[in-house]
Image (tube, rainbow, N blue to C red; front, side):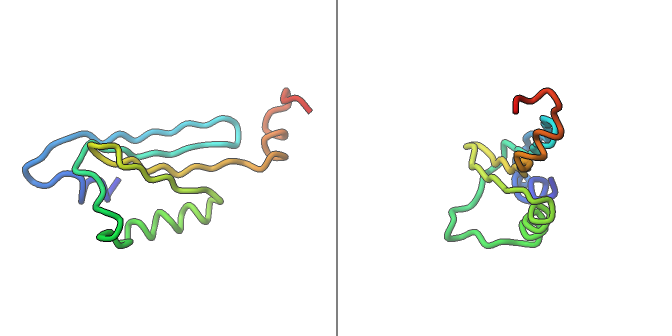
Length: 96
């Protein structure tokens, strides 16, 4: 969220930031999307403090990060998929 506030909207541009959360038992996704200026070209981008914090958080949560240039804007999601045995335990009606 802070990266979207800092980088997506220069002083002459307004826009929207959307925070979303979806869960299905032990699986979940947390996302932050904006309709701002988008991500810089990959060779120009270097990981800053915000990116490092998100990467560390995802690692601690055993989750993955999904980045997308949504033209306009950027979408960042942290996705956690539970191990199959955890999914089975979370849903007692799940087929065996």
